[in-house]
Length: 593
Image (cartoon, rainbow, N blue to C red):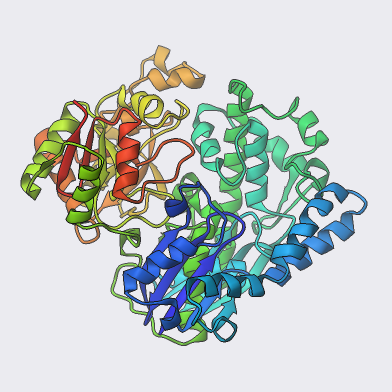
């Protein structure tokens, strides 16, 4: 039984293929189109996942779309009618698009699928799953748990903005929902836009900015904007927001409350923006903790699965792990809309078609290495066609030369095996560096990634060493948990250093691995296991043997406003236009010097 899941038309379009209950492949359209957060129909991603299985579209038994368009249209129409005549401009822009493209989405999907394979009987094999059910399925079915509570939180699907559910074997039920317009994702997005970043793209910048500030607006947010109940449910005061009827997230009363209009992206980030980021982050963590406690009480479960865009907030996840009621936590690595494609396929596979789950002790995501891979011949043909000089090495020499470059302070582009599914590079399409160098954080941000200097970098650490270097006693394979650097590796600050505020805090060396230690002494941790990424694990072991440090800086192989690289050609282009020093691609090493 083969089931293809699709997400499309809003952001992060993707495709995923499940065969006999096993996840075969999953990929985002942006990796092929080279358009970040690409929302178009994922034709290239579909071809990619079909190719991974060696089948045609006609060989697929079901295609499942990740949400129900008529329910979403119902929400839009009811919202506009309730607010009329406010929102007429937004209504006038949205309705022609719905009438032309989205209202009859089944017809459009059938047309797009026929363009891939004219012999695919779309009318008979096309199904639709609700948005938050797709998120919940993406969290529970690949998890290592036979039974678990499931929480989803995002901006909005059809009507739901969050849900509590329960998964048991092949069954999955939603017990409670938060409903539009009361949304944690939209609250966070409103502050993202007000601080001067892009909605549905830059929320992680707010999370990274938060430790520079103080949560001095937390009380004001909870007093004026969010009526938060003990069970985690809440209501937003819509007089402060404009996302229901307007073309902006925030309204005039919001701007008056916080002292002025939104920051332009071209204006400097001031202390107030840092404090706003810290405040909305703290509120978000409190909501997540309360919802988790309610989920534990409602379900009686000891394990929790998370998905939806808010589940990518790894600071909230870290607090949930430390302070929440659950023994174990599993988060879908592609927690946003891209993961909805996988969830739709899994929901149809297990809950509708009754295919069994295979529980082996680990999760079913295969380390999230579910995308395209390239043979050594393909890699070398690309390098030769571009006129690039390269040297080929066996594995031992490849690792030795890579470690030499890292110890020498060079930035290394690392391109190996199958591409990751989701927003994080996990050691297949990565830029690596030595975390012991204090200057490496600013060098990578400004000269390699071309992005804001305040952004932190994540450590990749040997799974067997994580508890010695961080305050974490379990695996974090998908870079979705934040924890403090362990005391033995932290450096006590002088009184003068502790009094530094704002972005000047970046200058302070806080640990023996300063390039991956944020200004609050935390890190977004990726543990590396030999079972899921053996070559990357061996590289970390080799670096550890030479330096006594089992940690590397691991950031995604891309530059600002571009998707993570997919092909050898993408990797070479990124290497050539940045100050990455060395490209390790398959068994080939390319050097700039």
